[in-house]
Length: 225
Image (cartoon, rainbow, N blue to C red; front, top):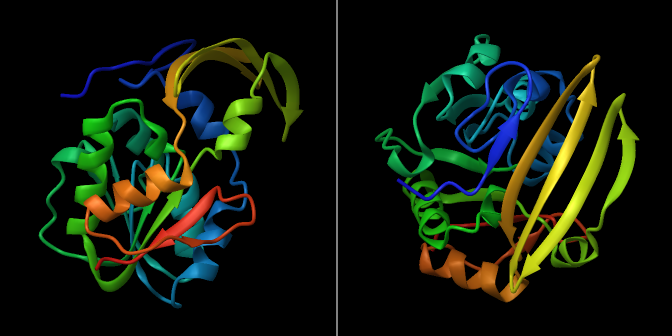
């Protein structure tokens, strides 16, 4: 089991990595499914690793794809009862089938645990068809470097970034979320991941060159070699 570097506080269930289930159940889609939809063939089979409450996966199904979600939190999956899901840690998954596209969103690739990152990419490779695509959402290095204490609001949700501590490529902070009269905090550590480091990690897991899907290099695709 990977070392946990995150914790969370607030009403309702909290996942092992500190995510507040009731908060994520309220979080609206932010165009993630449309980015993936544009990068894969119509009516693709899609596996999302770390699907949470199904926020992205549900929209992909609406766009015509055949979907399956995986998450280690049964509390998260309780909010995705309308979708096909499997409860499992990503690194332990073995479905004995492959998909046209595998999604690793929510900047999971920026985990500070290098062994966990390698295991997630190996799982993705194992479940991606030859010629298929792994789609990844990454925290861009420039945004990582610019993060500072701040406050903001989006879609009726208030965000407060607390103290930011950097230790080489690692960044630790606490973010407070307020929505629907409730408040949660999430303390976590994330790892800065350059384009070359990401390319090397993908190569080591058996994927080819990166195809950038967005101008800010926050979304990318790669194909198994």
